[in-house]
Length: 187
Image (cartoon, rainbow, N blue to C red; front, top):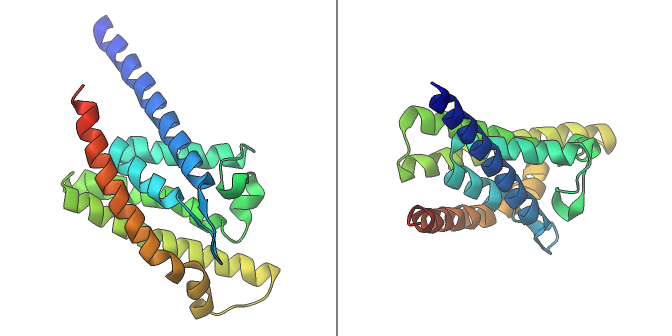
C-alpha cells in the first residue's frame, strides 16, 4: 500500500515536471519571431509538439500553465508580452484557443486512440477550432475598440497568412516529436 502511494507521488511529480518543461518550450518558441507584415512565431509549433510529445493530459496542462504564467505577468507571450491585457486584447483569443486545441486533442486521442493519423487529425481539428475561436474573439474586440470589420477581412488578416506556415509547423512537430520520442525511449 505504501509503495503504491509513493509511486503515485512520483508520478504526480513527474507530471508536474513535464508540464513545466512543456510550458517553457511554448514560452521560448513564442519568443522566436519571423518578421513579416504580420509576424510569425513558433507558438503553434510548440503547442503541436508538446501535445504530440507529452500526450493530451500533460500537453494540455503545459498549455494551461503557459497561459496562466502569461496572465500573472511572466513575459511568456510573443514579443515578451504578458498580462491579462494581452489575453483580453485582439489576439488573446488565439492564445486561449491553444487551450481548446489541447482539450480537443486530449479528447480525440482519448476516444479514438493514439495512432499517428488520429493525432494529426486531432491537431488539424484543434487548429481549426483555434482559428475559429481566435477570429471570433478578434472580431469582438476589434469591433469594440476600432470599429466593425467584416469576417472576410478578419480572416485575411488573422488566418489566411498563417495556414501554410502552421501546416509546416505541424509537420515539423510531428517529425521532431517522433524522433525525440524514439531517442528518449532508447535510454
